Length: 298
Image: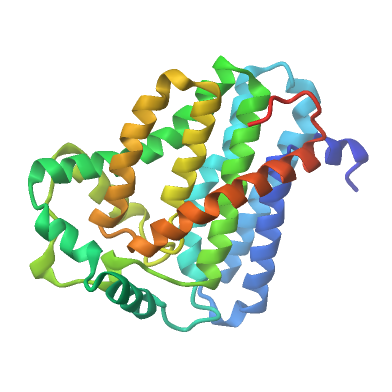
C-alpha cells in the first residue's frame, strides 16, 4: 500500500493525468465489447500509472536534479499525441456518427457558404499556403518552447503552472471530443477538385503530421485556438519581448485552422469565447491541488 509521502509527492499535473486515465479507463471497461484492442488501451494506462508512481516515489532522491525535474514535468506533454489519437478511438461510443453535417449546415446558415472550402480556393497561392502551414506548425513549437522558456527565465513554479493549465485544458477538450464527435472539414469535405495548395517546406511538414497523427476527431472546439490564446497571455505576463512574434504567429495560426480545413469557423469562435473560463478554472484547480502560496499568478 502506497504511503502518504507518495500522495504528497504527486504533482498537480500528475493528479489530473491520473484522473483522466482512470475516467477514460472506466469508459473503455463499460464499452469493452464494442471497442477493438480495448485490453491494450487499458494496459497503456497501467504502464503510465506505473511511470507516474516511479516519478513520485523517487522524487525525494532526485529532487535536486534538473534533468529529472524537466523529464517529470514534460512527461504529460509527451502523452498528448497518443491521447489525442485515442479520442478518435472512443468518440463514437455515444453518437454513432460524427456531427459534421450539423456544423457544416451551421456554417452555411451563418456565412452562406463553407469558409473552410472557399478560403483555399480564393487564396490558392503556394506562398500564401506556406504561410498558413507555417502558422499551424508554429503552434506545436509554442507548446514545447514556452514552458521551457519560463522554466529557465522566470522559474520552475511558473513553468509547472503553465504545463498544468495546458494539460488540464487539453484533457478537458479531449473529453469533449470523445463525447461530441466532429471530424472537421478535412474529413467531411473530400472533393478532389478542392485540394489544398501544397505549399513548400511547412506544407510537407503539416501533411506528414496529418498522416501520422490526425484522425476524424477533435474539430469542436478548436484546441489550437484555445491553447494558443493561453500561451499568448502567459507571454504577455512573463515574456513581453516575444509578444509581437506570438501575435504575428497567432494571426497566421487562427487563419490556418480554417484554411487547411482542420476546423470550421464556429470551432474557432467558440474556443475564443470559452478560453478565458477554462484558463481561470485550470489556474484555480492548480492552486487547490498544489497549495502554492508564493507562486506568481499567471
